[in-house]
Amino acid sequence: MPIEIKVPTLGESVTTATVGKWLKQPGEAVKVDEPVVELETDKVSVEVPAPASGRLENHAVKEGDEVEVGAVLATLEAGAAGSAPAAKAAPAAKAEEAKPAAAAAPAAQAPAETDYDVVVIGAGPGGYVCAIRAAQLGFKVACVEQRATLGGTCLNVGCIPSKALLQSSENYHAAGHDFAAHGVVIDSVKLDLARMQARKADIVGANVKGVEYLFKKNGITWLKGHGKVEGTSRLSVDGKPVTAKHIVIASGSNSANLPGIEIDEKVIVTSTGALELSEVPKRLVVIGGGVIGLELGSVWSRLGADVTVVEFLDRLVPGTDNEVASQFQKLLVKQGFKMKLGHKVTKAEKTKKGVVLTVEPSAGGAAETLEADVVLVAVGRTAASKNMGLEEAGIALDKRGRVEVDAHYATNVPGIYAIGDVIAGPMLAHKAEEEGVALAELLAGQAGHVNYDAIPGVIYTWPEVASVGFTEEQLKEKGVAYKIGKFPFMANGRARALGMTDGFVKVLADKQTDRVLGVHIIGPCAGELIAEATMAIEFGASAEDIGRVCHAHPTLSEAVKEAALGADNRAINI
Image (cartoon, rainbow, N blue to C red):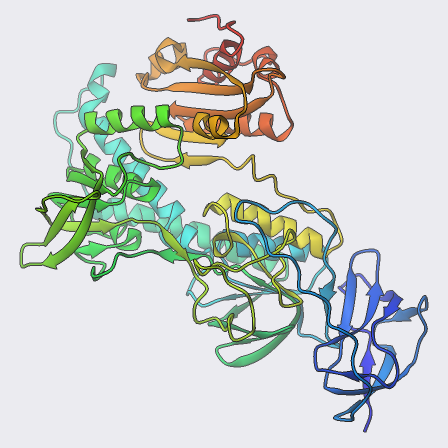
């Protein structure tokens, strides 16, 4: 019996479409999911695939005809042989390692009928933001999440809980060390770690419930369970089949580990376990001198732990401006951190008292041992692309297990996309969010775009470290002539009033055009101050543009203005 190929659901507000181009002619053989015809609307271009393999019998409509949702487009004789099918289109180009560039929106793949327009796998910052924006654009949306709560790693065991503990530990340290200088004398400061952890849990709870509220507000269905991709338009959630015109992989990332080290989240922990310690370790060894290790190391250092950082490279936070990294290291050492740079951990042995680590120079040399009550393994994160059916579905992965995508986040399998930590680029929540919005808008036929040269990065230690754009080292490597403007917080009135004068603002501008190329800040509230610099880079501002903007006095933001003026030797207060 012939199978009817019908106009699929095109979105809640779209009821008609125009037949653009027939991709298969009567008598030709087609395979299941192979595109048969293109439909066009004012929101999206859709390729309608064959619901089964067989021979196309006839076209019920002509190119240029306007058709309604549910109308018959063609009929298909399932299983029948036909003439040789047309050559298959080449897969979309793979993304380069650095960043995708803007281009025309991709055509979506739509079966005759689906459960949803868009299904997002993963409810972290990239996934839930993508789902919300897609719902705002009129798509019928579902989000797959196997956690008991929404928000992914970031809201549950990452960004939000770590910032809560960072703030609490800063308050505790300030009460015991800094308040006296302000005339606030506290004779005895007591740590109630259980209450501190409870506060953190309350903050996490409020945030994840907030995402659940946004899902309800925007009509997004939460599919609870483990998502597995089956192919174009097909996936399963805990084995139950689900169909969607567009599938978005936003599965995020997992903590990386070192060979031979067994994580138990009690004495050898990842960031997840480090957020849940029930007592302050006397000796904490952090393996890895990156953002996560230094932030969590700061928490426990302020609360009384003796912290040692073991880093394979001869510097902290690789990729940061060298001058900033050097100053950062000095300030952390001043706070009590011990550094073993240029070293690697070759063995971790659990004992009744804790852990004994074997450490040796990265370049080779005599080994030594370090004893710790708790060891934090913070050597980066890896794309969460396993056990999702990606390889079985034919989705291309790179050597690091990241999903390969084109300029519009499309994989090589039609109708399947990926964003966030699971693709190339910095593993940052806000980068994933921007990609989620861009993809949703692209699927709706809009011009979604992310400027990867204007993605800020922040380290939430104290002082904070923030940067956007290029570093000096990158500009030298590119052969770009640049000039520098720098201003210390020591010369900023507001910083003096706060008693927070460590650090500086550094502005890098093109030597010829004065265009801002990079801004690097180490000091109080650097994570907030970097927003102005990000805006400047996004809109192609010059250092003079920043310098001519009136900044309120006295504020920390004046340091950004002074640094920008300094690029032309015009700083006022130094």
